Image (cartoon, rainbow, N blue to C red; front, side, top):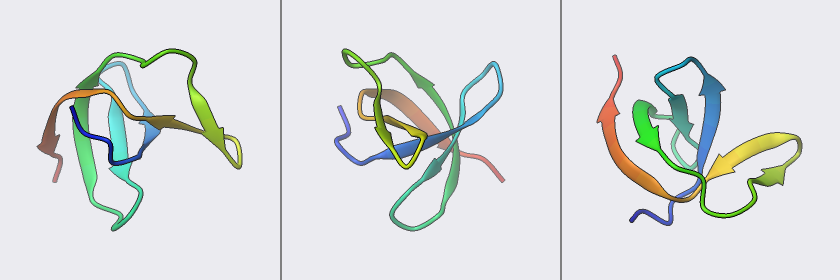
Length: 54
């Protein structure tokens, strides 16, 4: 599991942005406990898989 924070951008399939470098990915995730927030953004820590979304 990735510990890198992802920011959920929305979409039923889980569009997210890799917070550190801004790479946009399509992710299939599950929440790890309660969602943590950073300035109102939902941060994902438990990533099942991530595909670069161009």
